[in-house]
Amino acid sequence: MRIDTHMNSNKILDYEIHGGPSFATVEVNLAPGQQIIAEAGAMAYMDGTVEMKTSAKGGVLKGIARKFTGESFFINTFTGPGKVAFTTGLPGDIIPLTTSPEQGGWILSRDAFIAGTANVTVSSKWGGLKSMIGGEGAFLTHVKAEEGEGLFFAGGYGAIKKHEIPPGKELIVDNGLFFATSEHTQFTISKVGGLKSLFFGGEGLVMKFKGPAVVLTQSRALPQLISYIVEKLPKS
Image 1 (tube, rainbow, N blue to C red):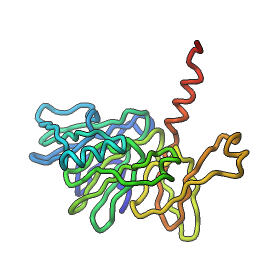
Image 2 (image 1 turned 135 degrees about the horizontal axis):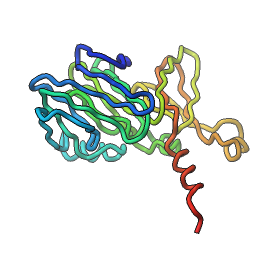
Image 3 (image 1 turned 90 degrees about the vertical axis):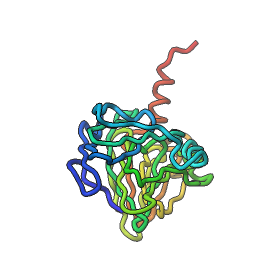
Image 4 (image 1 turned 30 degrees about the vertical axis):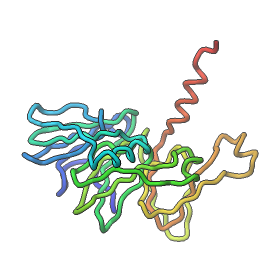
């Protein structure tokens, strides 16, 4: 499992990401008959030669499973030839990630999946009560390739940073800033410091990852934005 280059083509898909890390958009050049799937509403623009079809990819049950993670019930499939561009709802970066049955899949924060090759499956993965308490919800987004090597794009709120945790080391991440990690990575939810730090230190709960592992974080948290807006609203 690896993080792919931000720009230019690779052997799986011809694409370019621009506008990051604040307002990223990914442009994909599809060959005749080549397909890419995307979240409903993720398409920014496309050539008139590109065909789009909407369906509950994998059937109704998998569509329901996606809804548990905050992703859309329906998936759009775009077929080339032509250029199609995708973006995310929040100002931030977009990164490409690869997956295969041998490498394993990825666990993403809610709403992070944008688009991917046709062999990529988006579903839910039970994160348990620790995930729900940590602010990510009881179900996390699970992305993997059913066969062959797949490529997909994920969008974060703010800039995205990669952390390589060596064996025996630990990385502590604010629960709202978690972005992605391997499906095999183990983590725990806990507080920083004592009860005084939990209630008055402004940090709340954190996610603790133990190496060896790769963890991606985003530089902004949506709950913090919501809290800021609520504080500024006129009080009746």
